[in-house]
Image 1 (tube, rainbow, N blue to C red):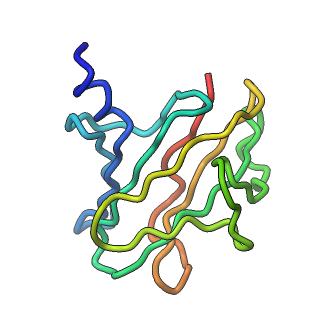
Image 2 (cartoon, rainbow, N blue to C red):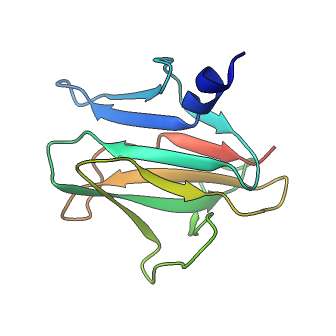
Length: 129
C-alpha cells in the first residue's frame, strides 16, 4: 500500500443522512465503524454537519458489557479540555494525536450538535492495538 493511501486511512468524515442515519468514511472512500490504531497516530475529523460547530465526546467503555455507561475520557496527547469535548468547526480538519493507553482499552465517541445534544449514536470505537 502506498503512503498516500495509508495516510488517508486516518482521516474520517461523519455525515448525517436525510433519513437520520450516519455514514463514516475514511479518506480513501471506504465506509466502516471501528478503528484499530496505536499511540502516536494522528487522527483527523471534519465537520460536515449543517452546524457551524459540533463536538465529539469520548468515553471509555468496557469491551465486555455494552450496557454499562462509559466514563468521559480524553484519549489524546496535549492539553485536556475541562469538558473533555473535541470541538469541530466547519473548515479544515481537526487533528489530534492518540496517547498511550492500555492495550485492552476501548473508546467510543458521540457526535454532539451546537447545543451539545447527540446528533447520532456512538459510532467509532478506538482500539489502540
